[in-house]
Length: 112
Image (cartoon, rainbow, N blue to C red):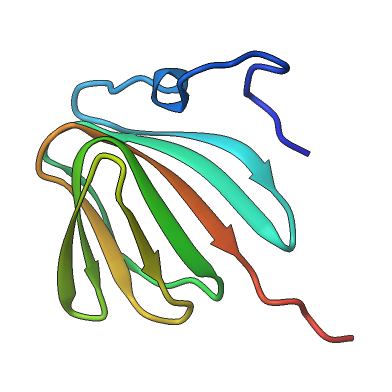
């Protein structure tokens, strides 16, 4: 289920999280074995260092511009643009300027 988001209300997603100086702010909207939805707000100069994920990660920049490094390749993603970061590829996120994004991660179905 989706949490931490207005119900039955038209709203602007970028207004659901605030940029705080010197911080990376996150707000989880959904988290389970299959999918994760998280809003992020990056203050200029902040970053998430290189890491990996076993799920495909789709970034949608809501405001500003973010810099993403995926498996050694750099991408600049602007407001309204998306980037798919494949599972198992190391990646990092850099706030060269203030920006906000929605991260959707889709995890593989585990066979039993």
